[in-house]
Length: 144
Image (cartoon, rainbow, N blue to C red):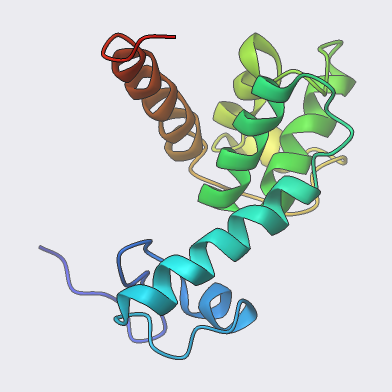
């Protein structure tokens, strides 16, 4: 395993909060499960508020999860790129998710509409996809 650079921050605790995020949501000890989960829920709510304009509730959850994973700024960048390229900026599936993936490519993260630069877009893309696959799997075990 490669050692971390001295200035590289790492996520910690059950919810894997980055230090700046933990501080932002009032978590003083990321290794305290109650604080960590409470902070994660608070941060998730904050991310959801950024996407109130997304009318479809499932799409809104997908934007929220992506922002929870990589930050709202990168999601906004992917939304702007999607719109610029004729896709619907308020639909994650087959629209914004495509541009989230492209934000790892210099051609896209240097685009004039991108404000937050490079992001490993595959991480939020797979995070959202994996959560929804798990959700579909769990639904098979409950009666609706």
